[in-house]
Amino acid sequence: MDPHLLRTFVTVAETGSFSATAERLRYTQSAVSQQIAALEADLGTPLLTRRPVGLTGAGERLLRHARILLVRLEAARADVTRATAPPGRLALGLTPLAWSAPVAAALAGIRAESVRLRTRVMVAGLDRVVTGTATGALDLGLVDGFTAPSDPLRLPEPGDPRALRVIESPAVVAVPVGHPLARRASVELADLADAYWIDAPLVSPLHRLPVDGLRAGLHYDGAEVTVLTGLVAAGHGLAVLPAPLIAGSTVLAPVAIAVPRLVHRVELLRAPATAAPDDPATRLSALLTA
Amino acid sequence: MDPHLLRTFVTVAETGSFSATAERLRYTQSAVSQQIAALEADLGTPLLTRRPVGLTGAGERLLRHARILLVRLEAARADVTRATAPPGRLALGLTPLAWSAPVAAALAGIRAESVRLRTRVMVAGLDRVVTGTATGALDLGLVDGFTAPSDPLRLPEPGDPRALRVIESPAVVAVPVGHPLARRASVELADLADAYWIDAPLVSPLHRLPVDGLRAGLHYDGAEVTVLTGLVAAGHGLAVLPAPLIAGSTVLAPVAIAVPRLVHRVELLRAPATAAPDDPATRLSALLTA
DNA sequence: AGTCCTTACGTAACTCGTAACCATC
DNA sequence: GATGGTTACGAGTTACGTAAGGACT
Image 1 (tube, chains in turn brown, purple, orange, yellow):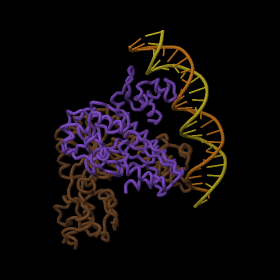
Image 2 (cartoon, each protein chain N blue to C red; image 1 turned 30 degrees about the vertical axis):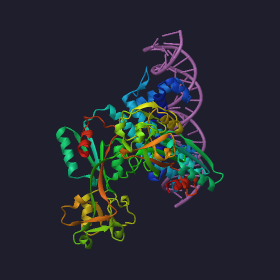
Image 3 (spheres, protein in one colour; image 1 turned 180 degrees about the horizontal axis):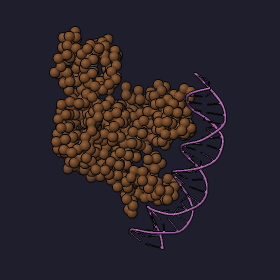
Image 4 (spheres, each protein chain N blue to C red; image 1 turned 120 degrees about the vertical axis):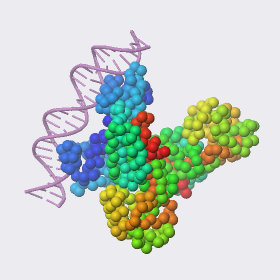
């Protein structure tokens, strides 16, 4: 189970093709074929079906492990090598809804402290922020989600369960101002199973809400919060959002959620290496969790 | 970062010697030396000091990652290969204090259901049970610890944070019957910082209590609960224990703990592969968490 | 016929063991 | 001088690329 083999296995699983994998990883088809054969021989069980290329049961199992292993391997390398290199940069990753005024203020504070800090901010979906901080590509990650009050977020796998709480704010259902629901003081989410919902996997993913049965009428694949709120305002469907986000809106109205008790929570993830007290990442995380 | 290299690195770190590592892993000294050199070249930084052999800063970092990576690699292999093999065996690991009458009853129930089930029960410290279930060497693991009411246990690294709650019972300070404290209705742990404590890392490790400042007067390195209670009864020191354990004792008295609020909690860990509904491990875990 | 994976085979790279070397106690 | 890690070198193994082969569309 050489990491090399795992990497090509994962790539084959993703591309569904030996030749595409060969091209992407700068091998020949033949090499890919041999690597997969070696892996299957090592584990004593077929991992892929050929023609068409697909995962066997064992392959699906391995895929889950392999993805995580490769991330952690990279994380280990980053942790060890970065311990040697001096700081002086700050790479911050955020999920779209993790951005808020307090975060902006903290970031401004850090940049005022160390004027010439090379700062990079990336907005992406939950998975990319989680793996980014795990591998050390990011120094800090801010992720958000909806959960019961003061419950930690359930993060996808390489995510560190020791994430730090940054902000909790009420979660509401966003509706257009004219919408019948806007007159209700509060709703139960389960009662809205028949409503149209907007699923925006990168912003407010329906499937991560601790509620079943909400079906999406419209999918939005971007990461722009304004597009999502615009879609809601235009009546394409409802979305669960943090209350502060729509507090000043003239086109959206918040409806409190009676059941389940739900808050929007932002948590901070740290790259394993950042520990030095003078590290900008350390100081920023102190500001954010204060 | 070949797993092979990581394994010898970990072994060198553990043994503190290249030659001992070579012997244990069936290599020559020379091979070990070359492997370490290859790893250091790959990561671009020295990992070990020689003469005497010890870890550098980077080495300590790598060691933490390497241990986990190796466990997860083994876990991946076990998960994939075991999916192929039929069940019919049940390997259960327990920390000493995780054993209790309900556990015994559930185990008896399973063995009554499937009479010819090859069953193996292992009692060991927390780390071994956690890594055992992670690697798939164990099908189920029962681990225990002291925590705030209804808070999950904080398990060491390869441990799955989704462990299931099995039993919670009050935590008490165990004292000999004649002891002055035995007359007190309750105590605050912090007030007992000057008392003698028994540290039994495999049974009731002081350092895992969510309280600082308790110093050990005596260390017990075994895993026998009866030895630990015997030591307490003989006046060698105090220990935090689950109340049911000393409920019927004539030589030990329980003293309730006022602050911090503390319970003894048993959680269930499952090997990644066990999912089939007819699997004995699945049925036992259903019994335990019912 | 074309696409795509597999197999055969030769070469290049790697890894390990032997043995000589060097540093420390 | 004994112990223990390093370096040099050769042999066995592994892993890749080229090229031919075979299966499915």
